[in-house]
Length: 113
View 1 (cartoon, rainbow, N blue to C red):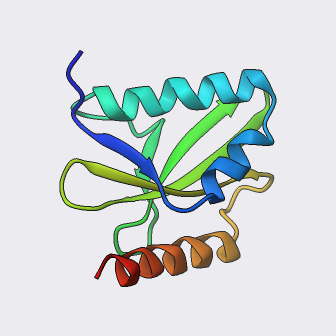
View 2: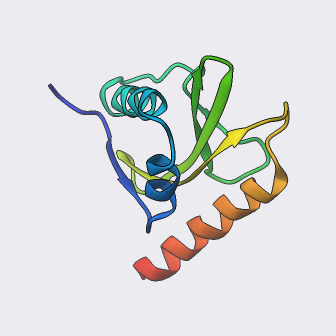
């Protein structure tokens, strides 16, 4: 199988979030990350740009009535860096979660230099 993208995580934020989820949620997260890697065009149901940010995206996971978001960004064309995840409990994405994603992206590039 040919992957269109490689997915990595930055530090342990995503891993900490992932490990706290029950097996059904982890299975769904794995499946959607697989789609992000494999599909040339990712449906917006699973992946979209966060409005008002420069290059921050969210992977969207919905299982039963629970909604989860995993923030990420592209480093070069085909490399996606996972930042952190959270369970979404309101319509709007909390500002502090977006701010954290922006800060982590900046930190990633600073360390990459």
